[in-house]
Image (cartoon, rainbow, N blue to C red):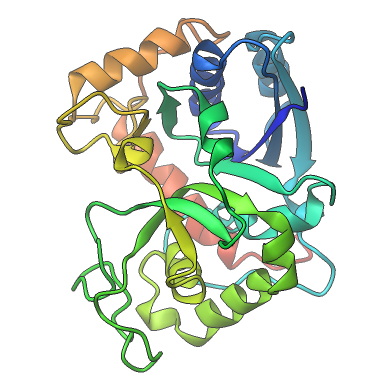
Length: 294
């Protein structure tokens, strides 16, 4: 059986989140399946790479490290937005170009997630007619959302009722993505509409892929800020992460996160104060304006 291919992006600060995510995927994967995880790394230390390698089950998981700069195809440039999000949020746009061409189905996951269901079932979705499969963003829902949607949807010729997906989980049809030049279109879209791109990567993806995505069950991307009606398939720790002392959402979700983290080399981790979190955000902003020769 061929391995399932998963892509994530992480810097040194969030590698601890990735460790817990991988353990949760392994624990819930059906027998007989294996996974190859491509990690687009943004200056992850050799020590943390070693700790992550020691944390995985090598009978199930293979790690493939990719330096962030190496995954950007020649001739393509990152859009320059106004947000405090790290540049690695854009790396999902280049997945179809560095993944081996024979791999036509790839799952992208944000690292601030915990999986509680077999991810193999996601790969069973039929993407023949779609570029991606994803989950409706429960806070934004449609383009006409006043604070996070696509506020210039009329100018773009799109209905305000167009459904808006969250980009934390994306099942990609890489062949179709390349054929339609999706990456170039998204970058151009973000560059041309900076003042409207509050969530820059999501803005570009939603505009270019409007009505071209398969909608998955909301249980596959349940936000930690929302009380569940039933057990989610995947918890997405949006806003404050459970590694911070200031995390103040579901205690049950936090317990689940630490259940998996304690199975890693970070089992003795102590939560982080707010000052370090703000320093991380400032560094994210400064990195966007750093000269290319540094």
